[in-house]
Image (cartoon, rainbow, N blue to C red):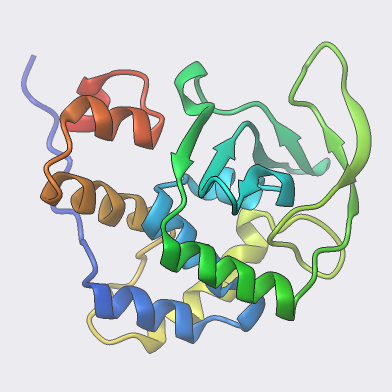
Length: 197
């Protein structure tokens, strides 16, 4: 079969990453640094709870994602693949951004359906890092915050999404000399082929 053409990927500069964070409201700035510095998928990032961040060990544990179903609303679900459940390093600058956010915008629990174990779906209080005033911050609500920030940063193309910061993270790892396997595990990809795609 012919190779799949994935097209050109836009990789922002370090300055553009900082500018994106600065263009967001304060309670969402750390999301940029988590995506760019830890490689989390948008749904993993939005499903991250306070207890998933270990400031002492400098690590973030990904074990769920925030999903949205029309007519149902937001809920917590299992990660995309078995390898998506992972623990990644928490760089100092990301930890500092998160600590600042938590100091300025303390997390309060919100009742949400937890379907991470599909055999035992429960409603529980979740202490999500990124929320609206009412509940978890699903992609539709996130885009209303994200799109204006992208528009304010010079050189960022229209349509650039939070997922694009995963490519930035992968690029950082590659430039630091990480192996394909290391990048695969850090991104939570199922195979190295997905990483190379």
